[in-house]
Length: 300
Length: 300
Image 1: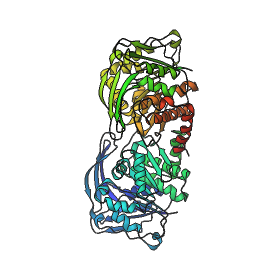
Image 2 (image 1 turned 135 degrees about the horizontal axis):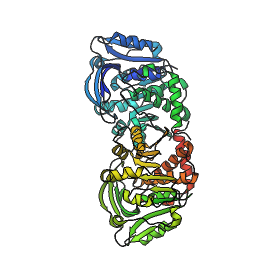
Image 3 (image 1 turned 45 degrees about the horizontal axis):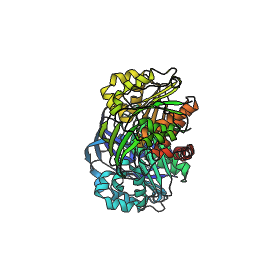
Image 4 (image 1 turned 120 degrees about the vertical axis):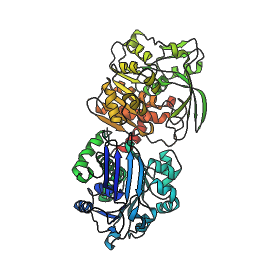
């Protein structure tokens, strides 16, 4: 079953202890697509400006994504500039230029409206809603957001959560939106807003997954010794996770745990190089091989 | 195979968001013993003052520990006072009174000197060394320390690590002693000091285990919704971990992962109440039941 991802396609300038890279192809939808494409057909819904380099369009096409709803508008492409220091666990945002994102109203085809698996990656909740209401028969809807929207559009975000199956958040966002410091309580609180599942990403500490009917799953991160650039790791995780579930076509304890594991190993590849450098070359075989190593870290 | 634990038996005054308790029975060796005793005979090596309440001796005796080398000296029992706030991940030490610990030179019997499994819980590295050199045939030696000793007796601690099989540290200690922020690099660096295994405790984020011959194991924490008092969780973990390995009598991938899992579930009981309240009532059946639930959080 194919999947729709709504999010950003961006030009990222990133500084880490391993160097600086300017105007890399990035953005939540781009990172998501790199891992989701290994499981299913990905329909990428995003906007870029007319300054967006042609080579990036060529590249995205080469990844066999459906780009029919990737809009090129007059104006500047969304740009983000950030820096990581020390243990690379959190980014310091130096600059954000929204550009064409400001007036983005996603348009999709009639065929795309019938897609059942939907991921609303981190963009303005108004844009997320704009797409979601267009969908004819959503079966599995995931949503990611960020602290900026939690602070500025809290009510809209909470309203939107009523129509979401899986809310994906990092630990800080989960605590902020729920008002709970314990992550299980936070997940419970977030689930009370609507989502029957809550996925809390803890970076190098792995993930916690909560279901309304009482299941809790928890996986460590895949141990990576040399983290070059963590930008997009969460979106790559979400792409592996949602992509696997879309392909599996059913939600149960086993498929969720396997999806979490695929998300984990996908993210572990993402952090090993800048931007999409590593994940753009990723194959399903790479994922499966690392999945076996990953399982061996904890299975007994 | 029995085990020796050297450490503290203390009177802890603890404040958490769930209340304050004064002069609870605590200390690294006491917490360690509560979980290790579920697997093997524990020989507790520690010192208390003549102010140490008789009821605590009676209690420890009731736990079927070998207390023949628990010394009662003239002077004050070691006291620690601390407070936990917010997410209860780190303690704020308000007061420490070393008392009789200052002049502690552990004495053990000839029989105890032949015990092969040894855990040097957190005390002055000079005291740890004082015991270790007495041992006739150490087979599996674990050592825990703390930032205070890393800062004040760094050379002694590093010298001691040459004779240790498993160095047990929390993430901050591992980073401080190794000078590496990435935890796998930190584990590698610590292993280069001598220990063929390094166990890094990450509190609510689980554990990372590194072996010199290249194995890395990683487990999440057991999800606990209501953390009442985390004091001693790391020692309870170590007790479950070392106790299981002492009983298993062999070190391989499977026994290490099972030991890590037993340590994890033992620690999860510890945090559910103040001091030793929960772990003193703990049975092997409790551990085994929770181990099954724990495995179900990540196994697929």
